[in-house]
Length: 272
View 1: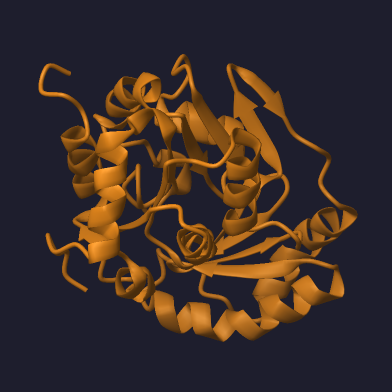
View 2 (view 1 turned 180 degrees about the horizontal axis):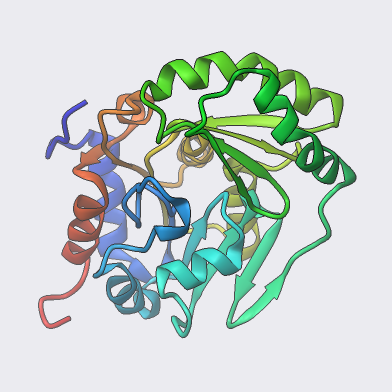
C-alpha cells in the first residue's frame, strides 16, 4: 500500500490531544522497519540517522517514549544510538527485557529455546531450506530469515508448518514477520508489553504506536482498546510493499523510517 498523507478523524483527534497536552502523551515505536530500515543482515541494521536526535528532543516534552521490539533490548539500544536519551524506555524480546536509564533487566530464557536452538540447523536441513536461509539468535528467541533467498516468500511458506510444529513441541510460538519466522516463548507480545507500560505510567492524554510488521498489530489493538476507553490514539504505519495489514488499520501511513522520522520532526517546535 502506498504511503498517504491522509489521516483518519480519530488520528486527527489524537494529534490535537498531543499538541494540547504533550506532557501527558505516550509515544511508542517498533524498531526494525519503523525507526531503522530493513536490511538483509539484521546485525547491520541501524536506526535512521535522525531517529535518536528526534527522540532525544521529544523525550522531555512527553510523558514517556517507549520502543517495543523483538530484538534484545541491549541490541536495540546499541543499534539505535539510544544510550543517554533520558526518558526513553526500550522493551526488548516483546517486553521480556527492559532497558531504562542505562540499566537492563533480562530474565533467563525458558528451556524450550535451548532445545530449539540445538535442533534448528538439522530441522532446516531436513526441510530442504534454501542455503540462503539463516538463523538469528536473539537469546530468548530464534528468528529464521528467508530474505536472502531467491524466492523469500516461497521459502517462508515452505517452512511455516515445520516451524510451527517445532515450536509447539518445545512450548514456544511462532511470530511471522517480513520474510522471517521467529520462535519465541508464549505469553508476551507487543500489545501486552505496551499495555503494561501504559498502566505503569498512568492514563495518558493520548497514545501513539508506530509499526510496520505483523507483530505490531497487537500494539495497534492496545491503541484501539484505550481509544474505546476514551484515550485518543494514533496508529502510525511505516509503510512498505511487503506488509499491508498495518496500513489497512493505520490512521496515517508514511514512507518507511524516513517518513516516521519526518513525522516526528513535525511534532517539535520550530526552534528544535
